Length: 46
Image 1 (tube, one colour):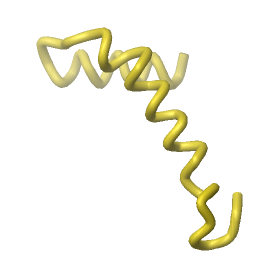
Image 2 (cartoon, rainbow, N blue to C red; image 1 turned 90 degrees about the vertical axis):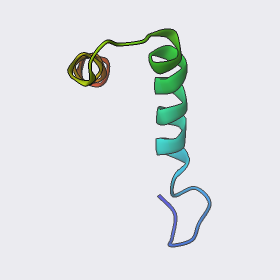
Image 3 (spheres, one colour; image 1 turned 120 degrees about the vertical axis):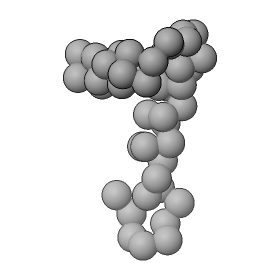
Image 4 (cartoon, one colour; image 1 turned 45 degrees about the vertical axis):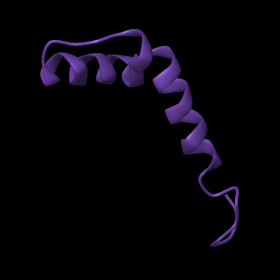
């Protein structure tokens, strides 16, 4: 982690969310919010 205002502060999370969207969100659609939350939890935890 860098200092406050350093461009590397958010790089890890930006990379994670980019991967999450590419591998999970853009490939699926869900009927309910609960289904989406369960898939998201399984992706992160599993």
